[in-house]
Structures are given as C-alpha cells and as structure tokens.
Amino acid sequence: MNQAWREQLFSQKTTNSGLNPLVLPITNAKMLRVLDICYRTWERWAEVAETIPQYKLSRIQMQKMAKEKKLRAPLIRPYQVWVLGKIGEVFGDLDQGTTKIEIAKSIVEANKSEYTIKEFETEQIRFTQSLTGELQNV
Image 1 (cartoon, rainbow, N blue to C red):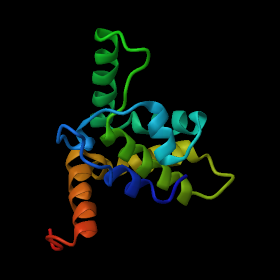
Image 2 (image 1 turned 30 degrees about the vertical axis):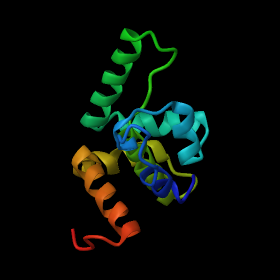
Image 3 (image 1 turned 45 degrees about the vertical axis):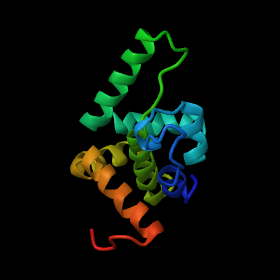
Image 4 (image 1 turned 90 degrees about the horizontal axis):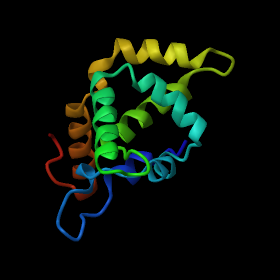
C-alpha cells in the first residue's frame, strides 16, 4: 500500500471549472493507483468497508448512476477511497498469519464513527491546512 495515499488523494489540484476534485467521482483504476494496491486487495478491503453504512450507500448510489448513465463500470467517490485507505492501514497493522479480514471487520465495526463522511471532510480540511499553513488549530 502506498504510504502517501492521503497526500495523493487530498492534494489533487482544483479542476479547470473550479470544482473541488474531492467531490468528483474517479475510476476504480485511479483508486487502485492512489492506494497502490491490486484488484484482489481492493476486493478484500471493500468487503470490510461494506460494514460502514455511508460507504455502502455511496457504492449503491454510484452503481445506480452507472446503470442510469450506461457507464461501463461504476465510479468511486473520494470518500470511498479514503475509507479503503483507512481499512488498508488496519490490515497493515495486523500480524501475518491472522485471519485479517474478520479481525479488520471487528475493528471497523467497533469504530464506525471514524469512517463517516464528516470525518473524511475533517481530515481533508486538516490535511489541506497543514499544506497551506492556514488555520492550524481547526
């Protein structure tokens, strides 16, 4: 897993239209590059992420949009990438030889409040401010 995944996710430049890139969906391929993981790893982490209601709702919404717009594959929201990255950190903290997926599910389940969209936005603000040096104590 890419240790600088947060930097890659949060330091994307504003689009030509002035939109914050963290409100725009991205492709699964870009998500895999940001996290520097393979498809199989993503599947395992996504299985754990499904225990988080806001993540699951986002996935359902993106699948619905893909179907309605006749996209080849559903897109993924930056919030979902952030959740997967945090779950990847949990996996990384677990010892080899353990049943990581079940332990990770238990950890995430017990700490669901750390995986909300509100926490994503708070971390985005903190990360951005540390880069710009503004409003350090938010």
